[in-house]
Length: 371
Image 1 (cartoon, rainbow, N blue to C red):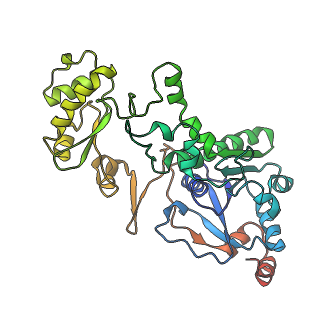
Image 2: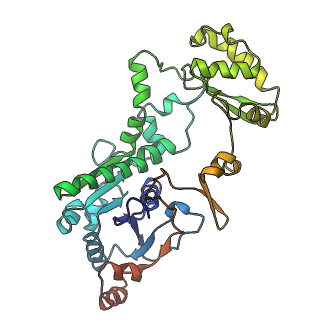
Image 3: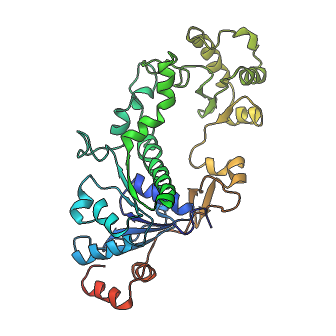
């Protein structure tokens, strides 16, 4: 169905950004085969990050299984692995071995620190990678500690999504050159890349290292969240003057009272007014008032409320499959629509047969306890 139909990707089982990359590619139509450890428990239906692919159980400590993996590599367009640098080489499945079997292969490597550098062999998590890029320092209130933005910036935006982009770029190049290559996607690099607009603002003198004092970090009164009468919150973001004017009109404020609203010196007074105003009504009252306007104001929804919002329902932004609510595929395609596949399915023998293994060869793998 999707635009990547006909593409085969081998995904060596891992956690976090690697599987997220596999989900994105599978949603877009690629055949993603997940190579699990032999004997691994089948994933739960609720683990929808593994949706849309079948899996093979291989004992990667077995030379027979390694040879089987290399045969699978010879049928693939791309590979995803997320081990520490050197692990795949020690298994006999590093880039040199795989590209020798399949010179057109795009070999995707997902790590936190990258394939080289002083920290390459060091353990880490999203919070560590964004700490070294300036991203974590920049998020939080003035005078308070930095706030981890879930694990979205390092693991997923700067990790899995970056790897997906890198794989597709290398696959596009391979169509003309006939040659594969290694894609080194490091979460520390990706997190730094996502910070490019903030570093650009700093270079122009428009961003301070002092947390909670900048236009987009909650300091500005027109870019923050406000508590409402029911304890819920409303998101306020009318940066541009015409949108700010709409907000003021709806709130009964005279926008001309705030000619210097872009100046940090003017922010405390305006923020104080907005705090008092938004506390006077419930979140949903405010949401109804601003619905359909250009005030750039929206209710802050929790993960139970978001799938039920009319806009999300109209677009099918979330899916409910057998009682499991999950985000749908993105982006949208006019001719080759993406599709969220069913829960992950163990299918070792069926997948091996489709990849060219004979019944006798599959039986031999089974007898060798390699699958």
